[in-house]
Image 1 (cartoon, rainbow, N blue to C red):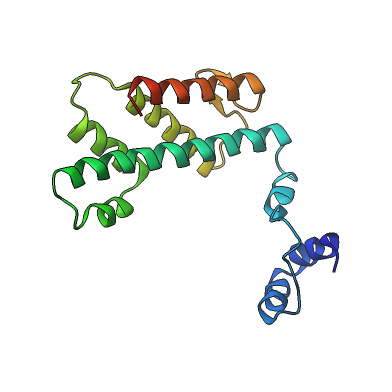
Image 2 (tube, rainbow, N blue to C red; image 1 turned 90 degrees about the horizontal axis):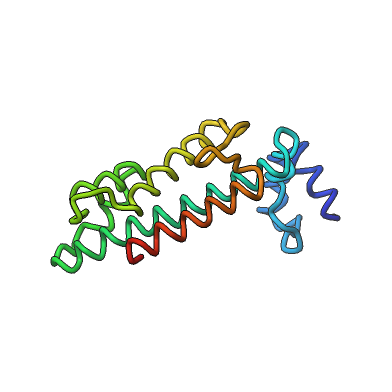
Amino acid sequence: MTKEEISKLILSNPIEAWRKVQSGELDISHIKSNVLKKRAHKFLSGDQIEAIESVYWATYIVEKEVSDIISHIEKTLGNTDIIDSMLAKLTFGDKISLLDQQYNKSGGIDPFIKFAWKVKKLRDSVAHGRFSNLKYEGVDLSGRKGQFKFLIDLTTAFSKSGK
């Protein structure tokens, strides 16, 4: 089957497509997994999809960093047994709160933690389908200017906090 035929099969009969993949009847090694993106284009502009992807990757990077910071501190203190399994059960917001309340020794507002809260707010907007007017610091994330501002602030938050 061609990529187009596979895409049509997935969109028209996903259960049959999965059955064919599982049985080995359908080879998908040559196709990219962009079916969801194609489907999203029915509802969103390309710029909106880019904004959503920017938020997704920032969320991934920031949440991983928050978890890594907490894990590193706890393991340095000798708490190695349960820290990673505990962190896996916490939500993104819980991790940011924990980092701020338990490990922020500056006593002030840490730029990385402040940025993490902004990313969480954007992530929540995306997760709940509020991306028609997705903005960061008042700038629309569906445009290059907004994405650039977001990237600059991500880089700045990491560098000011020694991350």
